[in-house]
Image (cartoon, rainbow, N blue to C red; front, side, top):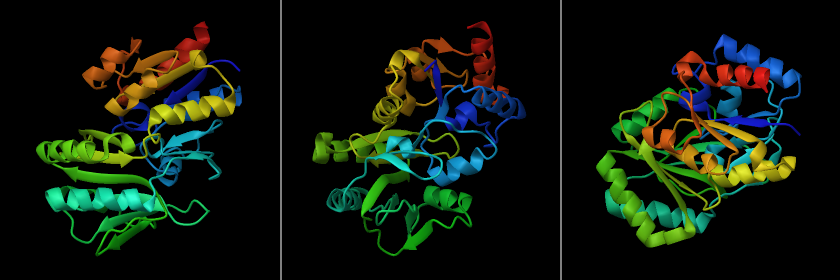
Length: 278
């Protein structure tokens, strides 16, 4: 297999209005038809990713929900790293005691992947904004009391920088290496997101799953990103590529920093230039 290309979505491949540029669509589908392996690695779910990428050919497994799930576009799971009920309940109670806050939970019950997005009846101002942005999403379920599902893929808190930093310290103290914690400024809302995952449920480990599934070397891998949760992938890729609008720490970790931003369709321009000169 030749070079493989995997891109983050938000603020990397997607424009800031969450659309895919016409040039990006043209280049992506042309390369996919030619057999070039193209994939995504995103914090978003399978359902939302497929909505954003409607009309694009996806020809390798998708890294979803920050890496908690690797699946095909027809919902065939390849690898799932989920937090079990007891661990999830312990995280919920720890945050409740510290900040009197309940999380969003993305997960599912049973053997079939039918995502559910649970949110608390009592929302803070940041959570209210997010729920409004998911209006009419069939996965949403409001709960008077947030309780774990059978498979809990993401536990998500939203708050101020100080609140999320305090929560991160407490969760790290209580759970040590039993969970993975991602804490960063959100690119759309004026708040901080703290995401709790299975310790193998991040993009970096999911990338290993994809490489194993395709039976290829990481040396052949080109990864595009903009955010702190992309750094783990950067460290495992043969070539790590940051878009111009990327976080400064991400740029420091990149092999290449592109001159264009996500709104200038930087990924598509790199793809066409690289493959035309290769």
